[in-house]
Amino acid sequence: MKIKYSSLRAFNKARDPNKDKKYNDRAIERRKDLKCFLDGCNRPLTHYNGPGSLKLCREHQLMQRDYGGHGRYDRPYTFWKKDHCEECGHTPYKDNKKIAELPEPVRTILAMMMLHVDHKKVGRKDKYTNTNGVNHPRNLITLCQECHMLKTYTKGDHVSEWHSK
Image (cartoon, rainbow, N blue to C red; front, top):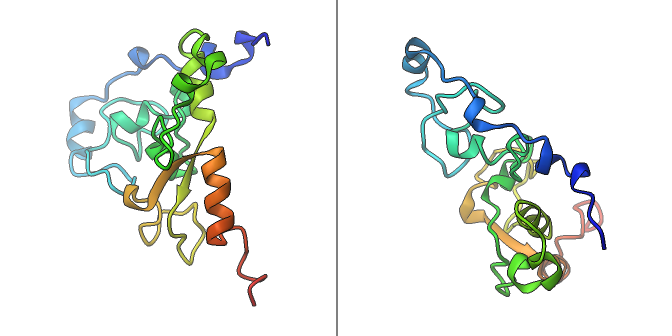
């Protein structure tokens, strides 16, 4: 299987973090008490202008898709994805021979795409919102596709509320 590297956005169109401009001292001073909006992160907002600079710390800013990462601003739970399945221990870039043969960063990108972040308990409100701690790292688990499907069906996560009435 041939992979077209030019078609992978994260491979050739990722934003270079070294080109981000640092905010001036006055702007940094105004932002000093503001924290990253992600549940479970208490770091100060980034000092660098760029995607996510209004709500994220530098570590999480660099994890966004714009920089070649897997984090999505509209889905805060994606910032807590691990590189292995927490249920069975599967690590795609180590366990899959085809992926292991690929060059970096393609190997990491594809391996991360094979893992899912699942909510242990879904809140009453939309699970994509940052309410009731549903997107806190303690409520999230990284699963491979097989473990995610098994958990979804054995726990009844696939049944919506209107089906159960």
